[in-house]
Length: 305
Ligand SMILES: NC(=O)c1ccc[n+]([C@@H]2O[C@H](COP(=O)([O-])OP(=O)(O)OC[C@H]3O[C@@H](n4cnc5c(N)ncnc54)[C@H](O)[C@@H]3O)[C@@H](O)[C@H]2O)c1
Image 1: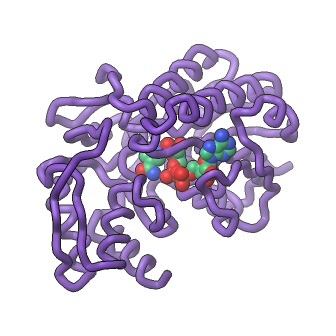
Image 2 (image 1 turned 90 degrees about the vertical axis):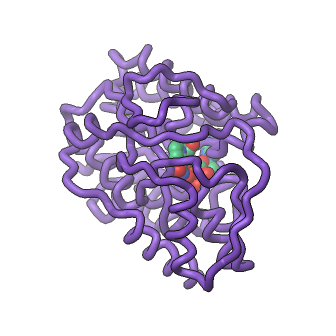
């Protein structure tokens, strides 16, 4: 009998890519998305789809019970937007997680994989940040992610989990119309539309940019490797990239776009990059896609849209 994955956020950037790869690998996939920001066209064909809001417990209880693994990616995904309506953010990110934990326990699901974020760490020193770092989030989004992590941990003896603290994920499929989420996609979209890039905050800020295909691989390994459970792991590359360098890498694919630096973003961290020792050891990772290579693929895809 086929293994069934329940993948949430399946109309979004990362969830849709994981679902597509899972179907190619022969998994049965049940996909959920309330289409609040995700797009129906993004959902891969071949899965059973439910347009449910996961913060509504009565809807979660109507989902098919035969599920082996839950891959939970649905949620409000922008730190900036989380300040507009913190209650809505809490429902989308934390209530949804609690509902899925209860569903998972009731239906004897083998493991739940959760999309957390480097936002849980808050302001940190300029060193590779390990999972042992104290979590002091700066945004409502980060608080909701951290709370979800703690709920997962409390119920971990009944429902084993993997928490992925994802750093900045980028690549083909990212929403080029949402100018409030996704640093790389925002800059790329601006360069495409007007040959200008507006950076809200210093070019000295730094991040860790991880390519979508590498993220998809690590999520599916999380399903396949039984020994990985009750684990919180950074999902980044370990590479420290300053925004000035990111903008230069993007600019190579355009006609010398003009760069403007002004303003700031609420809840923004100045700089963070991952200590990837645990990731590399647990997921047997040898090589990840370089920013240069990943950006070439992303820019080519964006130009073809
Ligand atoms: N993209 C990144 O760099 C990044 C980094 C760290 C963590 N994450 C997390 O990973 C997950 C996926 O990110 P993404 O970039 O694909 O985001 P996305 O916004 O493209 O996808 C999220 C999807 O969840 C759906 N959704 C929102 N609330 C829902 C609800 N209550 N019920 C059902 N569906 C709901 C949206 O419609 C959307 O399709 C998110 O939880 C995000 O917070 C993303």
